[in-house]
Image: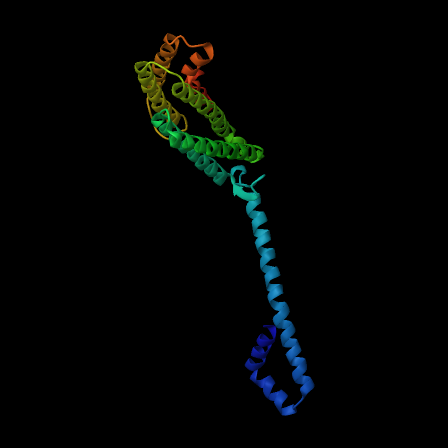
Length: 268
């Protein structure tokens, strides 16, 4: 390629070619050819070095002028570089994916009935995905949280991390409740009422959680009141069934998130 460029340079210098042809000097032509070849070979490398040096210096200047929240962060374990703002965006997107999976689990749980193997398989598959996404969010929380520039957003990341832990506990409780309802010979009316209030508890939880993470506005006192009411009804249902203590504790399912007087909102 450089040789072709050299010939091109020779072709554009008419006077020099004419002089060479008049002298019929092979040595002169060879000298000019090698000089043109050297220039065509080293000039692009020199120009590239100059451009890279300029880009490097301007990047350093730009980084020095950036504020803490604009610095480029290295997220360990992901082998990628993200700005802090993009890291927060990524964290929120992962969290939305997690909540979507939780809602899918809740929907499948409400549809689950004894003997529906397909529903059980879906529940198991979504639970595995949920655990994987939850682990990814926790990893991201730790990776971003270790960066000094993230100190302005520590409270926000703690909210995400605490919420993931609490939801995982509630999903475990949900599985226990479903197993109990499916594997025990219960009074049909009691089971129907229990499933109704359990579904209501799920919907209340969704509203409350959307309020906590800022997805939608709602009357917090009303939501907490409805949560308390559904919790009391479930507690009464399980107590009236004269179950053992571990099963009565299942009535606290989906109440954990509000059990500490809105623990999540106090972290915001």
